[in-house]
Image (cartoon, rainbow, N blue to C red; front, side, top):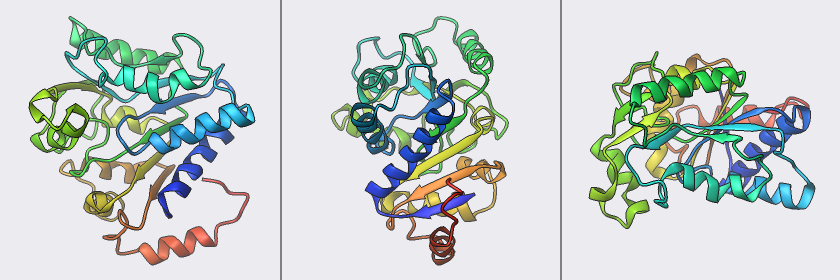
Length: 260
């Protein structure tokens, strides 16, 4: 696990560099897209590079991490609509190239199995963008989630619903109780994981992720077992890291050719 501590704008550029490097080397790459606040600056930077530098997504595919259950197809906070607004419609993804779990499916179990199969049929995810919740969840894998879990329906914790209420006018009762989410094992199957976290509210979760014991109580800690994880954090999110000085030293001394 590589931990990079830098100002938030630089973190977005670093993450976008990794996506651009992948797409220019392999235009048919498969991306994993996250929602929430953490990746928005990354998407803005990728859109800028698409518009100004010709970075193309035309032959790429993408899979979303999760989706609320029961939100109307035209609801602005339905994650498929959020991804369409923030990235998919702003670059040149081909029609149908971006897929997400079906939160309106009648057969939820079947929809989850179909989604797992679609990811596998695409050859798996090459680079997965992630955020982290204040309680250590990744995607919607709440504390107590199986570290071997696959795409499934989950019940959101009160904490997660309160954290997300800002997207629903501050009304926690408007935040759905259930979601479909890629499981931890699904996420771990991606070849490169890039996790972004900013702000002091994420500091304890980042500390547990990078330096705590692997535990279902902090689901993101399973990432310690992945061979290629990049954790991008600002000073506030890094404030609980015991090895912060070491992370800064190692990144400063990193060979320029190495990349993430």
